[in-house]
Image 1: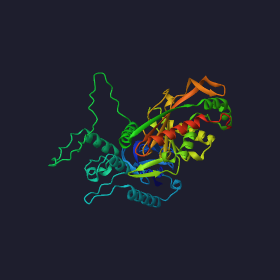
Image 2: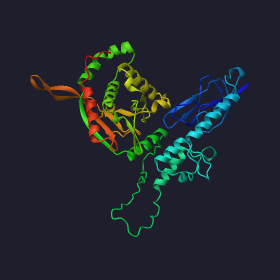
Image 3: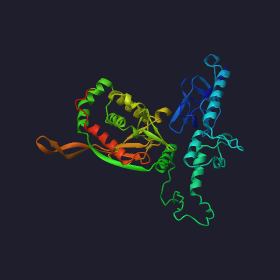
Length: 429
């Protein structure tokens, strides 16, 4: 018999650790090849870790809620010697090297009197909330060896924001005439009333809440609106949808058409495809379009179509459908929900005619498309103006006013609308 370590797999370049959510196998239970052993969660997506060998689980190296680095062993499986494809010493050495590199590249700088390690996720939250290194070191950790987990720092932030403000420093003898007074903002205390039901937010809902509050805090949001005539698009889709499904085995929705128009507008106005890093503007080379998708749980996830400008209508349709399906089945990989440079959300799927979406940081703009509604509209013809029934849709763009002014945001939104209205009804599939 041989013992094989189950290693925390690499889940994308931007993911260095994961949290153990639930053990699917207990010690002593038999494990089949490719059978899932535990559920894990990153700051991007949940997934399962399968076993590469058959055998018996003899040891769980971490508890639920523990944070594990990529490349680190999470369990030991006893199996036939012939089934172990990699010698244990070699595998351990490789894992140790990966862990050491991960620690070197992701840990926070240590102060002279501290030996604490802080995960990338904890470090990111601390940075976003303005927590200094010295303050972070005072946070009590409930993880392995006293490590500060995401739950710990969120609990600390909750207490921190609700704690009374510190006593003000003594005033200067001659304060400036225009000196302002800092206002500490904290969430109100909400008492439960008789008959109320208290529902604990799940992990994903907490993450979404924190991300949305952070986005509104970081970016001054402005939203512009335009109404587009999408009659040509509706008629074209109705005409080709059956043939498209027969030829490609995929249902064609409006989403890939909207993504295509977004890509074209970004090429015309590339400064909408940027990010802000302090006082620097990062102009993105790639056009990676995120598509907000509602999950059966009611939560939201944003899978990303990488290099959307390199795909034709068929390619976009297959990418959209594939990501939507795997979003609903919780089968997305961490890399597939990261790296977006612009986001599109379809509020019309819920019957809403328009919306004012919150920017998906660190992007600077997000497009919302509303429900397509039949309306009477004035049409200019060679014979004069006539009133006709047209398919209309409101489009809105929320943008970061730090780097996107009304002129750029308005021109981009109008160009997106122009591409929709100029859609060729004779487009072949």
